[in-house]
Each structure stands twice: as structure tokens, then as C-alpha cells.
View 1 (cartoon, helix red, strand yellow):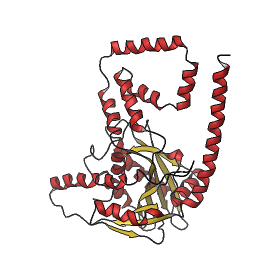
View 2: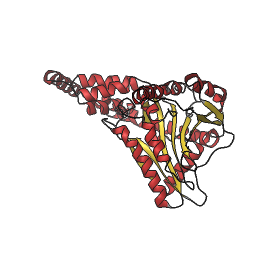
View 3: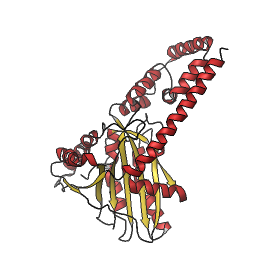
View 4: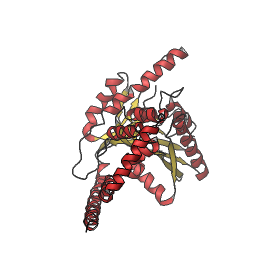
Length: 360
């Protein structure tokens, strides 16, 4: 009898969860079909800085990069969606349509932000030129071949990637250098789509992990424990025997007694991740050329640009190449700027503006 009641509760929870997911999927499908039509596209151009001394330039460069945080912060609290609806998203893109110096920075925002977006940018960069683009651009070559990939965090999102603070030069320069090698009859783009993080308090989760690390757990065990789904935790509590609880208490005391220090690097990394606010992020790379081999080559160069974010970091952004049906879906999502929850990364503001910021 003691086991039957928890089992029935578990079955009820599963049925309720399936119903919610089905309802959300139907709502999301409608938002994908109609959401892309309710957006506005901007081209953002920055004036060149006349900095001559290398040391001054490097110092000024980091300041300019960090200012992008204020732009992204405007999108932390967008309009809340209707019940089970997808949160609104904003797309930031770097694209080369004809190669060489033709590298453009685009932002696609919800239509209701049309008048506000220019203020967001010029409030931080007064000399920036923000132009509304009446017709969308394309990087796809007629009769060409397209290659694509998306990037996913290798480890738990509580572990950060390297940011501009840890890197010697502007991380964006590696991306733009590779885009500049695109030829006149080719095209390529990096797309970063952001949306508010709903239903997860990353800071609270991180603080719980830090507490467990101080109690003697390894960083990875602590992070795994606080990241497991809520219903798994509830089920575990249901079936946990009093004896098991006592044993766990003894084990914890043993950890405390035997503790000889914590892994300071992992501890500091988690602490730095939760210091700044997080967003949900999709990162896509698309390349188009006359041949499949050349498209793959361009894609590979752009993917390699993201390896710099794993230098001296616990986490990294791993490229996931897609083919056939998956590639078609990636191109569709790229073209309509759809957020794909399967490609979600949780990045804080510093990680985000290290990956994407307007040119310095």
C-alpha cells in the first residue's frame, strides 16, 4: 500500500506533464508560422575609431566590448507570452553576402520594439547608425550548396566559457576575419538568437551547487544533483526510506569531517557564471558556395573561430553539423529566425556579448 500511492502520484504527474508538453508544442507551432512576420530588421553600422597606440587601443577595446552588455540587458524582460506560448526572441547576425570587406551586422527584433531599438543602441553607442532594412538580405547562392551547424555547450550551463576578459584580442575579430575570406559568389553568416530565460532561476541553482561544494561534494556531482528535473527529485523523496536519509546524513557529516579544501577553480567558475543575468541562446552558422566541399570549408573556418571560448575554461561551445532533413530544418529556422529549444544554450550577459557585439 505504501508503494502504490507514490506510484499513482508518479503516473498522474507523467500524464499531466505529457498534456502540458502537447499543448505547448501546438502553441509553439503556431508561433513559428506567424511569429516571423511580426518582426523588423535593422542594419547597425559603427564608425571607425581613430586609436593609434596599441596599449590604449587594447584598453579602449575591452571597454567598448563591455558596453554591449547594456544593449543585451534591454532584452532580459521582453513581453511575457500567453499561456504555454514561446517567449519573444531577438536575432543578432553577422553576415557576408559577397565576401571581402562586405561584413554586415543585423538585428531582427519584435515589431513592437521598432521605435525603441534605435534608442537602445544609440543610448550606448551615440555615433552608431541604425537603419531599418525594408527587404531581408540573403547569403544563399543561386544553384549553390549550403552547409550548416549549430553550437551547443559541452558541459552543464553552470560552467562558463571563456569571455573577452580572458582573451588577448577581441574575439569577434576571429569571426570577421574568417567571413572576410568569403568570395564574391559565396555567402556566410553567424546567427545568435536570444530570448528571456523562463522557468529557471540559474542564480539560485548555482548557489545550491556552491553550497554542496562547500559541504564536500565535487563540482560536477554538485552541479548534476541540482540540475536534475524537479519530478525526479520528488520521486526520489517519495521512495526514500528513513534509513536512507540517516545514511545520507552520516555520509554528509563524513564529507565535512574529511574535507581538505574545495576545487577553487570550479567553485570560482560557477560563481562567475551566476554573477550576471542569463538568457537562452541559439547559435547557428550557415555557409553557401558553388560546391559542397567549399561550403564545408567556409563552415569549418567559422566553427574554429569559436574554439577560442574554450581556452582556459571548463566549458566549450561544440559545433553540431547537420545534414539532409536536419540541414533543411536548420536553414528554415535560420531564414525565419525561429528559436529552437533543442539548440538552447544558457549564457550569461558577459558570455553573450563576448560572442556577439558591434564592431569596435
